[in-house]
Image (cartoon, rainbow, N blue to C red; front, side, top):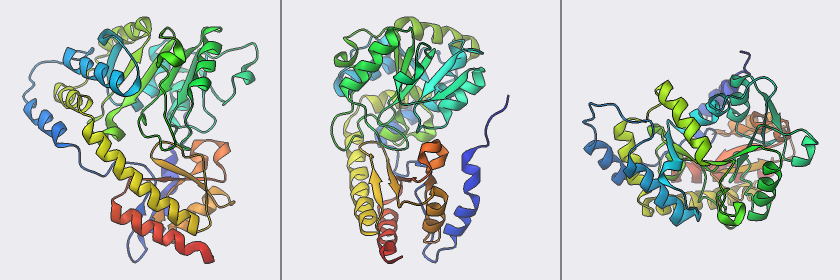
Length: 363
């Protein structure tokens, strides 16, 4: 199996440069949550730490009921608990879904032109053909077996509206394409709503051929817990359950308990959203003062930024000021003149980064 180099390995020199700044590095590259996991989550984890027996692949009824309730309250989605399946972090699901669905040679997997690299990797692991495109028209008479959407998107923060999603659903159903929407940044839209693929205004209440993926990593500062879920089409979820049972893909019982608590509580997520909003405003002000342009970035935890230079040059220039960011070419050729700046750093470090960027105006 031939896979591309792991992209983050190429940031070694920029990291070393940024670390040499007298006031220290501000790491806005990876997007790892830095705020504490909520007490409601850690308390549930501790209370469930004595777990001598095997968990089930399907997850507890309480967990799936908590997810069902969250979908109903926050995503306008009504989904049966039997159509929800916990996973070991959504990166795992993204990487293995084509394989779990039995896709292989001859099958095409579509994903956005600017995208999280694991969509491509998942296709390659399965032996399928990865195809980056933002246009359904480009497929012509052919069609992918699987089409990934991501909204709000990583890296560029694009948010797909109801009408756009509905057109994709109609197109895919006419061709027998499975559509999977990666909604791990759900609720983190800054300019308006970010509808779900399973919203009845999008799919007419019919979930056939459709799946959504969600993670607690960003919503609840639980990246270290490695928890997410996939839900939607009953038949597809059932197939995934059977394969995952054979493969022993089970979320640990204490993690299930912590996730149950997280999905049952909206207050901590709203508080975290407010933290990110404040950091976003600080960085936007600094970037504007420093002469940078922010494109799209209507949702998610990143700003998609350009100064009209090649992305690696911008990475170097920011590293010289102690700021580490991700080059846009990590996410496809269309990102060649952009960098991705994450909102995931403590308030004081974000404020420091914004000040350093603003000072680049006289460069």
